[in-house]
Image (cartoon, rainbow, N blue to C red):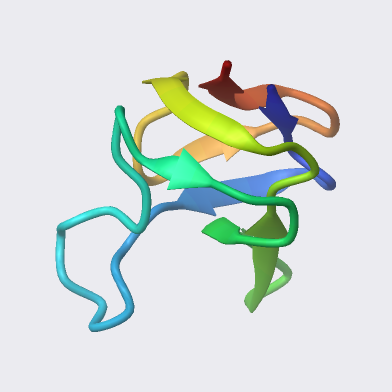
Amino acid sequence: TVKAPMVGTFFVPDTNEVTEPIVKVGDKIKKGDVIGYIEAMKVMNEVTSEVEGEVTDILVDHGTNVEYDQALIEVK
């Protein structure tokens, strides 16, 4: 499980700022991969994975306010 490192608004845009997310269910991710961004105080902060594996579920929607340590993505 990848958790929020801070309080803010979670975004999962692609690198071109379109609606397609950076990660999707079924994607393989590694430690350190960027899986989204959290906006806090008008600053976009990268959210990186602390685990390796396959994304099995994305638990929050694009633009959702998240709390510190809230689960964002399930990984197996």
